[in-house]
Length: 345
DNA sequence: AAAACGTGGTA
DNA sequence: TTACCAAGTTT
Image: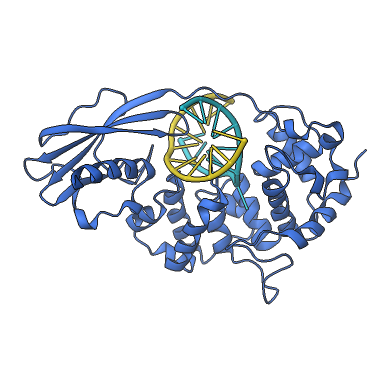
């Protein structure tokens, strides 16, 4: 029978020597002056990291904290600027919730310091509330993300497939959370999952918990956690119109809710294969197709280029030299790259 | 409770 | 190229 009491100490010893250095992180044991992490930076990084890799987040985090050093600064930012800066990171509801949360926190005079208080804020759920409470306030909350699910499934050799296994894994994870340094422990679990206890080819040979792991003992670590197969993605198709008017191109903001909500886009329609041309375009021609993979479907978008006969009836014209590729979501970057190449030719 | 919601990297 | 994966939340 495993001794769960030794797991946190083993992990913290490892973390003290091998913690990743990350822009939003305070080193093990505290900052330069023994200081704790800034709740604003912890919150911002945690939201950016939701379903998103550390590598992708780094540049965005640096950019956001340079533009907006405090939550009050972010709260005062224009919606469109925040959406443009978020462009490319994905899951755009996060950006809208980020602003709503910043404004709520600013109005309240600061971040709540409890998990329950944090949980009530927009864009902060079960994971993020626990992460902020643990990392910024060193509260003994149990943080369960994808890394922790995997580490715990292996430590206890849980063979129930995810997502059904989630409640069981949370209960098991709670039995491991220490009173001593819960914030460092939470980050240590995630570092372990990201660097040692990886989904494929886990590096059990250098794992600080090798002697505490049931799956390792049973020789099934690499096969855990089990997962129920995902449904195949359907294919969809649609049309995007790159409409020129003199030296400008027509853009419009997508509706706040739904796919790519609130982002800047080329006029398009329902992507159900039955799109019709937008009003105001006399003649257009196809310049190619872009393919894009979303979470739940793949999209093939026919890209049409044309000239408006007159002022647009929707959206707004942006002069060519002011079009900033980086302010567009990934799909629209592909469309623009194709159109720009055609226009240049 | 199941589905919606982005993107880029890796095997 | 296909398939999976990454510090989840909302409805």
